Image (tube, rainbow over all chains, first blue to last red; front, side, top):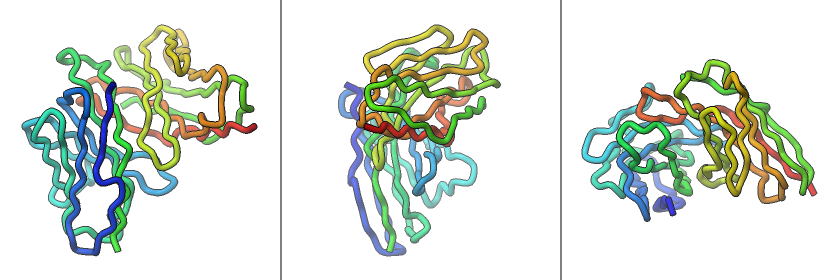
Length: 120
Length: 111
């Protein structure tokens, strides 16, 4: 159980184009999903928190107009990198949090396999 | 947010126990300690979590000191497939359960 998928696993695009990455919880409902970015040899950096049916909240320094997040259902969140540039090339990882008891702090995050974005 | 400190790397012989330490001296009373690992170019994998008592599952054991300022993840019989970066994370209580990853420990399991 608790499987999270991401699509695509790898994408190469030209500078200036937009890229959409999907994150799905396959066997559970996720009230909250998170998006991370990871540069080579670095740790994961939290970008934004996405709650179903509401606007995403972004971490300081993350451009919300560049990284559009939509969480339309309890099993799907999408991240769109708009007008991508080479510096946006990175490994993007999502996670989904099980919908545990309201206010529970023990809810575990389950991570997707990641999407490698290369912008030429 | 409580910060964590981990050694950058550790070696372990295959078949031996791997003991990975983590310091979290500013942890608050209701914050949990989570451990994840990341094998190269994959998403992090959940291992175990705990509050104050020691915990064990099929993957590992988690030992939390009585003052909760540090913890140790124990892989009882390390295999080559356990080579990964291991992250110790203190879960923020009042901030939508966000995870902030530190730099982790690269565990190298050697034959």
